[in-house]
Image (cartoon, rainbow, N blue to C red; front, side, top):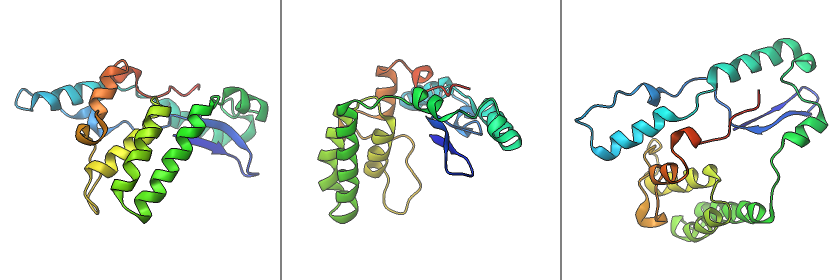
Length: 177
C-alpha cells in the first residue's frame, strides 16, 4: 500500500495497492515434486494482479511532471477516491492497534484475541491478517514466513482465505491509474 504526498505535504493519491517490481514468487516453477499445498499456494500467487510496471510508470510521470501529472489528484479527487471507513473498520483498526501494543509489551498470547476480533470486524483487510499471521508463524529474528499456515491459532491461513475470497485474481485492490 502507498500514498503519494507532494513537497508541500499534500496528499495527491489516496492509499492504494502499490508495487513497483513484480513479485519474485511469480517466477517460481510449480513442479509435481512440491507438496500439493505448496502447488496450490504458488498457483494462487501466480494469479495475483501485477500492476508493478504501470505503477512504476505513474510514479516516474509524477516525479517528472509534479502537479501536472495526470496521476496526481486534486484534494477533492483524493477524498472521492478514498475508501469509506464504516464503524466496524474503525473498530477493527483500534482492536488491531491494541493487539500490536499488547504484542510488544506483554507478548503474542495477549495480542491474538484482539487480532481475531479485528479480523472479524474487517474480514477483507489483508494487512491485519498478514501481520498477525506473520507474527504467529515467524520465530523472532527470522525472515518473514510468507506461507502463514496458522490455522491452529486463527482457524484459517493466507491460502485458505485467498481461495475463499475468489482466488489470487481477486486479491488486493487495483490502483486506479
